[in-house]
Image (spheres, rainbow, N blue to C red):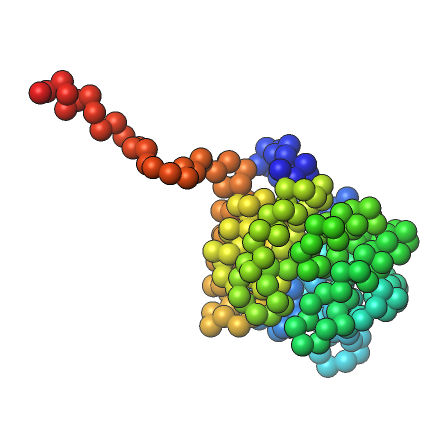
Length: 268
């Protein structure tokens, strides 16, 4: 089990810790498919306390400024969307800090524009450079144990493996890889990208994920506020189940939940 989760604090102290900040919500909104309705629903119906911010969306003085849609008290998580190298990611992160977004940064380095798979090698490089500069780095990766171990050494605050290709809503296509990271990495595992249903978010939380990030599944729903609320309940249920400790699984045979013998024998 992940050492970060092993202590299992009491429910009222069960906070997600990132860079010294405590968050009671384990649902994070990815705001790539930006809309006022989406952000309002995520905050009001899903209880999101962290919302990502693509720096290209921060457009002071422009007609559409995502900063105007994010309420006070919600933590901004700038990301380096659009970066193709570690150097470009570092440049975007520094710019975000200059804009007043603080030291929290989500690293996205993507050279593959067909499948949008993150470049793990460049992500590790960017993480090491930014951690040295005092950033709290949340790196997004294709789930791989060796990469995750390198990120721990580089100073990452968590590891953010994808569940499936970004924006696909396909669900958990790399279940075993995520489980390995949860078991072996001594950092919060925040599953990002590809989650398409609340039930999938619940499963990931039951497995021991520290949080999930969702965007497309809510943004493309028929009823955005209702879907946001569904994700909130799913995340909370999965977290509660994980902390409660799932019951044993029988690989073969069956066992009765109530006695089947005894009373019949006495009456014979």
